[in-house]
Image (tube, rainbow, N blue to C red; front, side, top):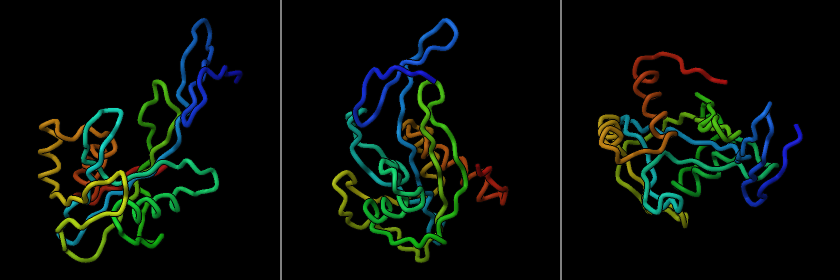
Length: 177
């Protein structure tokens, strides 16, 4: 394809012609996220400030794969260590779903992993990441209520909630691509 670069920064915007129309396409980085569940079936979320929204959000931990030499799982484990202080071994993280969050204008791929951790300490602990303020554990019911109330609008966290409700609690197998 002969895309014309309209903007090249950390993200790239390209102009793509298709038939008689021109589209702006965001060439975004792929990303990874983790559904972390403890022995009490509480779900780990991180509170952080998102400049695009100019507000704090509550979402499952995630990271952008912006280093071409870093593999998906390496990025996930690094981000989990930075954002949550959890040391997860590669064999503990199981890929459960990949999806394209914004197919209308972006090529980015989100990969979600599932991690079950031992211990049932649901108390938050301090984090050392500049972007994450707090680690929060919620029950599935609390997570669903916050989504229904509009307090959580992050798509990967909503997808994670649906996966937990429809796959992990029923034993159904999520689609993995």
